[in-house]
Image 1 (cartoon, rainbow, N blue to C red):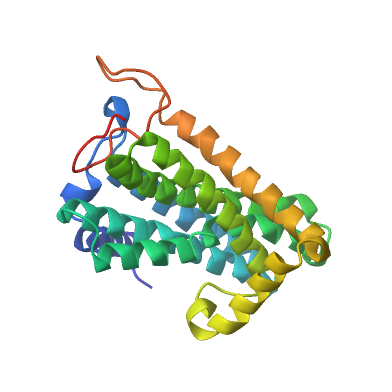
Image 2 (cartoon, rainbow, N blue to C red; image 1 turned 90 degrees about the vertical axis):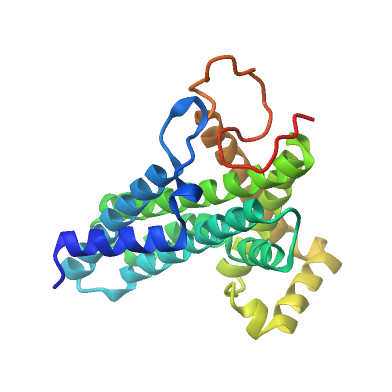
Length: 269
């Protein structure tokens, strides 16, 4: 088995190759931790959660728990896509096909980050006298995935705010929260995956059309989408508030767009 130093060196090399220092070294507001530092902390949390899940699989002998590790890996996809989109945004003067393609893929995979909260449903089937252990394990996995999703949305909001102003940035956040509620519903109840948009586009389109065409027949499902979308929005606002706690000298206070991330220009709107 590879040593801890070898694993750390491999992870460091992957981050440096995919996202150079100029992309991940930016400071958050008030000279706080860098984006690179946040990525390392999230990587550490992911490894720790993965270890807990692996231990639970070994102790219980039930491979079903491994789905938590898989879902957490999927939660990294939108963050990696957001980092790539942010890099493309800074490298080009305007929207281009690479940036638009990365943004579309990000939106497609974003629901995977908060989706893990719905794995709490497995407490009914996994429970074997270890309810609180399983609850803690699922919760720590879901929380890690949620923070991964928060950072990816934070990056995309930064791009929208820099191009169109902070008001457009918050409209973007609200819209994405609602769409993510739909995406989580499609995944949990209709069992569609993000890649099914390419593999089975007509099937997904048919299900979405049925929801839109017959809202009263799917009232309970729409309630779930609205509730989960609100949960995402409120959770994002709470975490976003934490990014505003360290004011930089001379910085104006307010509820504007994300501050401190690398941007080509500022639009104070």
